[in-house]
Length: 384
Image (cartoon, rainbow, N blue to C red; front, top):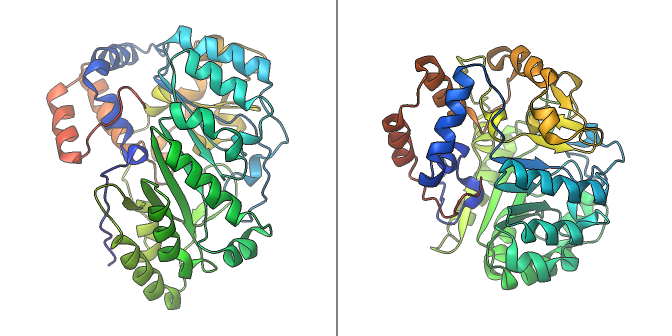
């Protein structure tokens, strides 16, 4: 069975939600939130938000897991600027300008980032890197982390996969950001049969231009919200993938990490990861919801799913949505054990929060034990 060596030396993006919530300065707020949940009170504001600024994109990747949610919409600039004020007043600590489309092609991206910084809200960005050059001067100084999707290590492979010739441009843009960045800069790489030979090449390039990490993930079949499945690899490809990942991991240093996701490990072992969700309540949605141009959802795995849509940010304030009866009903009707078959990055916080809710109190010793056993160091103040 393939067991990758996974480094977390520089991985702001790899720290679990649980670990981040356990920061000393957040403990009182975490306990208050859970105490309210124990009383069936869902009004405590989220700690962070994931924001799809737009679901338009300047690429059309066949493997994109968000293809089903491409409605050609975006959050208008004025609404987003007002929304940032709402975030601040609610005590939201951080934002990930996330997915659904390419955030950097939003027409108001500079204004939005400038206001995010002005309000003192931490932020991060997921991007394909094509338009990165337009924002390097500001995000280089202010962004906690940026993850750039490459999915290739050569221009030829990039052209074959994307049908467009942007490879040299995204490498140059990533290099410029890595040179200017005060935060973490990393690369995302979806492993597919077309790019296996590029795994070690991309790793060497990322390291050479000054990135902090490269993260390898599996391909998913983009079916629909929360029903996409991991693509298992043909047996003939497995030795080559493992060899390439092994070569990539030899590039690790104290300043550069090679990350292999649990879902990729599952794909290589042709075995779905079983988290054994013996709980019904999703506590994680209380801490980090997803906001998109077409609705607010409990999490990104449910992007576009009407039954998990709790409101419309274009028609209501986040506070109104957050405290609405509709949201309460959606949360109560969601059963993680039955509805959430995907590997969930928030599973640990759900397990611990559900245990705490059963006891109607927070067991801080248990949480501290988990924090220590995770082996992760919290390198950000607050960033969720």
